[in-house]
Image (cartoon, rainbow, N blue to C red; front, side, top):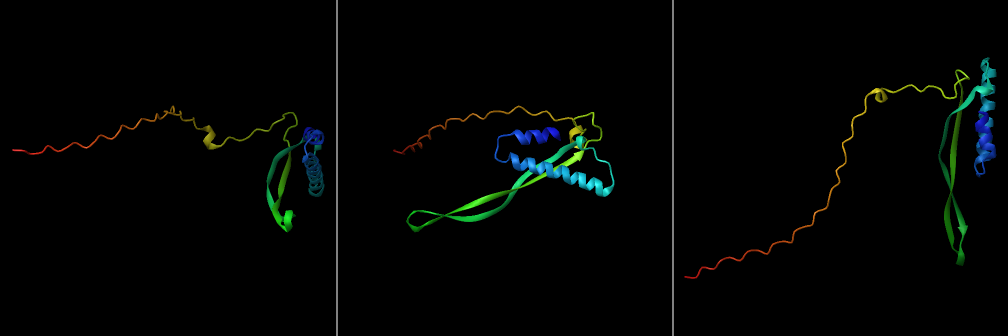
Length: 135
């Protein structure tokens, strides 16, 4: 968790202070919930379990334009979700992910892709003339 906080604190992106504030809030919420439930929480063993950024609502605004006109634009917002969890053992940096049923099956061999070559169209043959019957 300390590494995530340091990364957010020293990143030179405009969103970095917001993410840092969000991470601190997530740690404080975890401490509060542990105190309410009466469980021991080791803050050093916390890690970022999930981080999502989704589209939020859009605010429609109007900007003045020349000759008494107005341009419409949308102010986009985002929902940022960060969830933290405690590691089972602090000696491992990454927890083991359970394998799904599909991952245990052997992978099928992919057939080599055959590249389609465009063929030139043959010019249409002129219709054959009928033989005239002269007798």
